Image (cartoon, rainbow over all chains, first blue to last red; front, side):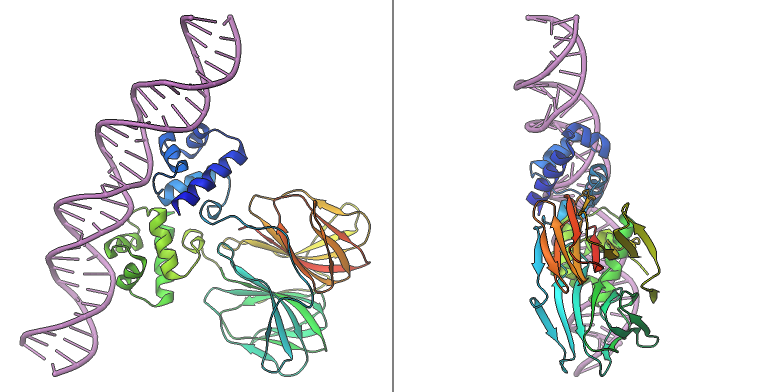
Length: 179
Length: 179
DNA sequence: GCTTATCGTTCGATTTGACGAACGAGGCTC
DNA sequence: GAGCCTCGTTCGTCAAATCGAACGATAAGC
């Protein structure tokens, strides 16, 4: 944890091209403190880290969480598919929530039939749906709306909600946001 | 900053339904420390906050960044459209990044022609593209990949990247994630 | 009522993070 | 070379974060 922050601080400061002294001045902390942090000595308080993140103009998570990878592709047929019981509803996980992110992204392929009712997820989650092709009834179980290709809807994910295809091979993208 | 962490800790602990004593035990910190943190007294070290985030099974950002807010629909033709210069690239803003969220969601409608090259966004951003219809070359300017309907790709948004339609009326969903 | 839990808070002792001053190293002008 | 600047590090001091122990409160079991 501490060495990671040390590395992050060094990396971000190098990237911004400013000196240790200057960064300490902008963040309003003692440069001795910053020196120790970059050398991996010490365990910064959140206030200190916050000041540094602001001064570096990066989100604080960039100093705490590990760096990220590069291009990744999931082809139309590939990926982890979460089949529904009745096989009329297939959700492919495109991007699961890694540490630092707050959303899962799915591709949907749904056939007409029974509406799929989802139980509430964690409190605070919200869902975003963009319909690619077809037609569907989407939204809170109490007040679904009808979407056509290209339409977008967002609604709370922490209340019961439905997705019902109204045409064969209805496809869409769904983003589950975890706050 | 400190009051926000205090509120976050209390909220997440309430959500998980465990006691202060139990959380302190799981996180390996003194419960007196946790008591003070939840009451807004004190400025936790990153190690302490990290231990709490792990014990609460939430990303550490949920303890640091502010929280959030029903059904909203944007029809295929509606919404704020960001036209490109050459009108061959139209991005409709579906969900802009509200406080607490970390992503913008766009609908894309692109015509073949010149590739659209985007300058890097803020450090740490990443982009997710799901192609709805058509075909496109997408990704880092240095190594774009070809996507077909239903394909998905993700790549860093903080480096130059391109989007070039290879078929008329290529549509997709793009998620810009700000970490 | 008494015991035995767990709950969350408060208090003193200890550890340690943050500060400011001083330091040597390197670069610059004159 | 002398003077002056900025660089990053090291040191002693002080404030504060963390700890462990003790506290009163509340609930459950006998």
